[in-house]
Image 1: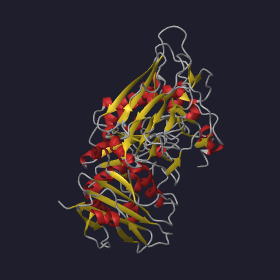
Image 2: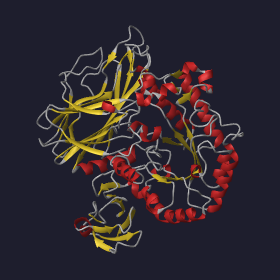
Image 3: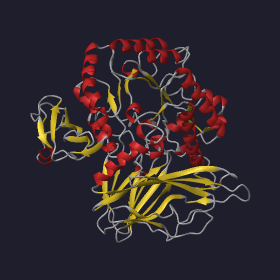
Image 4: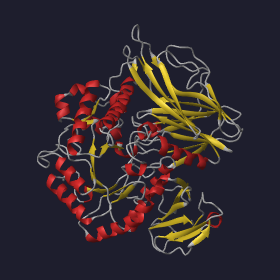
Length: 640
């Protein structure tokens, strides 16, 4: 993670004031307390996040019945008259949690996405008295560097804390004594004044209390995310496409009206069980990336826009997914020429990101009302005109280096706050204007995975470290493991149709960027879909690691998805090309010990056909890699 440097995260000792400073107005008060009962229920629900809120700062708290969870959303509104107050060090969480036992407390957290093989790597650290562990995002996107989800686990249960903010945030966890942990979270930088009567969003906080092991907490959180923080445009699995990507055949800047309509027609003739036609970047004038900022399709390749392509896709019984990147403009494009006043320029970039300045990157300021309205209207018209079913929203830059340019001392963080507020308004307005529209959140692959974005968007591309990386397929296998600890809806697909690639990309969604004119590839994909589609729903069920996480191809990696209500599950075990071990014993989890389960090996090599749950959990199943690399898939179902 060389780009992140020391800004990714640090562990340090620091001294905290006994009071909470909520801005330049209001009294400093001691932090609130969240007291957990012996059953890890919140026995005392204090005013959150501060026991005294300054004028203009208000919050709405929502409790999620039956899930031991509650959330608070904050908004800040300036007075309508008088001298605007100076808001400093604004925090959305500033409280002490009191655990019912004085036992060691560990923090489970994950690396975020940064287009590296270690994306979503899980970590665990034990809190030490007086030592604060600090975390922060990098570059202005919420899950770049660190996922904004944390599990504080102790004997018998724990507390999960999540941050809902699609910009930069920071958080700290400090053990005080006697099972007490002081928690702060909120904006990374804040010292600003608002305009009279102006109202902006601040980071939201989500809390989940749980009883049991730390992994029980993770699965409770997955269920909460699936039920409460998933878009409501359709049921969860309908949100997640099984797509034919055009880019297994055509490069990003090679698509045209002719070849895309022909491909859609060809896919219809194949009658593959695919539900979405996936068109990614490169369709706009000037191509990708230099044409970002030109809102119209390339006239020489797409003289009639994308409407005809959307029509042919629908005739093939497929939804039309189209990629957009409204937040970026490049030097010399239409936006740069016609509305430079809407664009922010980068500054202060580290050497590894200096291209943002030298290559002419600009950021469309969504905090600017006129710019945001223009973007909403243009994108909305294109969605309607082209028949777009899935809107794919990308953001391939580091917005923090644009927000910080020419900041005044009394406006630190304000541009970011207005921008993120505007981003939410942009997405919410698209959803309002187009009922049933599915929003996909890309952001250079998985760099905006906070729960505020997850309640609006699905994740169809979780990392730009993918098929073309030398670490493939272990990289994508390890990412499924790491991200599944927190989020139930994600996946990948494949760019080739060998068994290892197809099985490594399984998840709640899949995009197949393969050569659909190759009869052998189509036949292989067809056979894979016959097996994959009936069990696809299981990837949204409970998740259990069966080995330690590893990015090394010399070691096995295995995990399990289990639906306790249906008594079904799937196990995946991957043996890398460099592994010295051919055998692996897998002890399953979450089963009913008294039920019998039928086990099916996709390759027919595991001889067990019917076993008790107790046997599968205590003695396990031995899998063998007769060749390397190997991707083993086991299905199981409880007897009726």
